[in-house]
Image 1 (cartoon, helix red, strand yellow):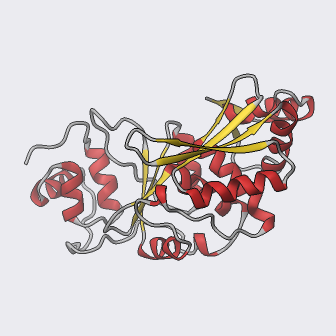
Image 2 (cartoon, one colour):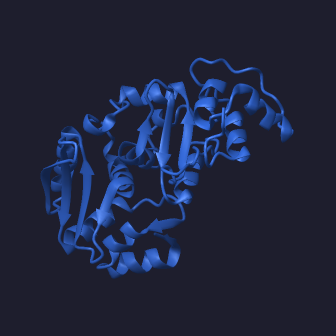
Image 3 (tube, rainbow, N blue to C red):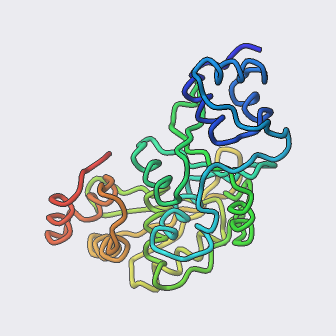
Length: 273
């Protein structure tokens, strides 16, 4: 079997160390079980016990991460709902981000091994892979399943952590204009979208929701916050708790009309695009 383009020895070793079954490693790399073992032996990696061809064993990860509410958990959950994936027929979740520092922060918060998915001609965005049956079951209990984009509900989140969860949602799939006057989140789930819109209006933000059609004909929803005052107020609410030592362009754009927030952000954090 030929190795898939972009698959390095380092990537194969990382998958092996995560104790992923050989069957799944073969699917991801294009290599046979024997070829995978040859790579492991070539680099002097200690051999684990033989892995079954059944469900994947977990990587190192805090399996109770989504069972205990914290600001870090709420932020990661927001990212997962908007920009993450729960994989079909696998006890695996993944996060795709152009900026690897975000993936490394997620892995650190979840006490997870830093295992990246493979790259190829059509897959160039770094993707963090986490295998855990318990985590997937916990997410399923929240209503978060494979193909969640059209049906995911808005999770029941303690009020204390709601702003941080929405920060994760915006960090994951939000858009903010350069002038800092409008922001929107896009979702295919009507339940999630109407709930998010209700929260924005309960915060006295100038918000509306617009239904459109996707290229496949499915309805999609854009939840807007409009106006300088509303955008600044939203920034003050969702960025009150700090996570990580960098900020995204979204935060800068939302904060640019508040000298207090702008000055604080610009001086304390490393800015990433």
